[in-house]
Image (tube, rainbow, N blue to C red; front, side, top):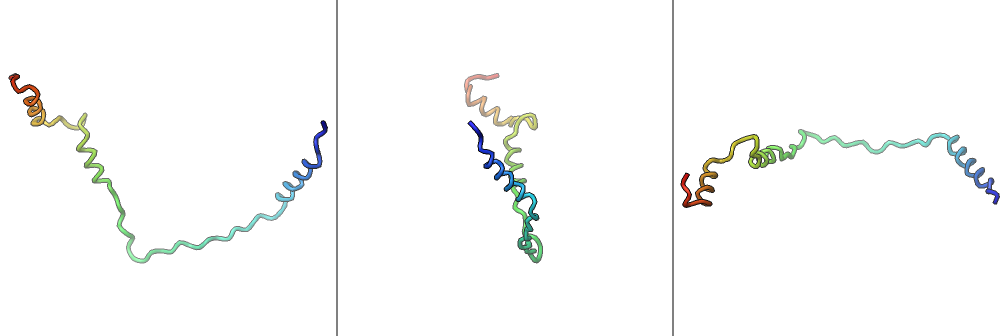
Length: 82
């Protein structure tokens, strides 16, 4: 079976015609408008998140709450005396 060479030649001609033409001029878009006055305050959750994580971190940052350990020990074994 013979390939159709004319189709390939036509495709090559189209590609070469596109590359030989002048580059397309791109128009610049509108500029950004500057806000007058001081910039708006930034919204941050850093301190809130840091406090939340610090409250839940236990090892190796700090020791366990001694009063809570004693109360849990007394609750679980009320008749056990060390």
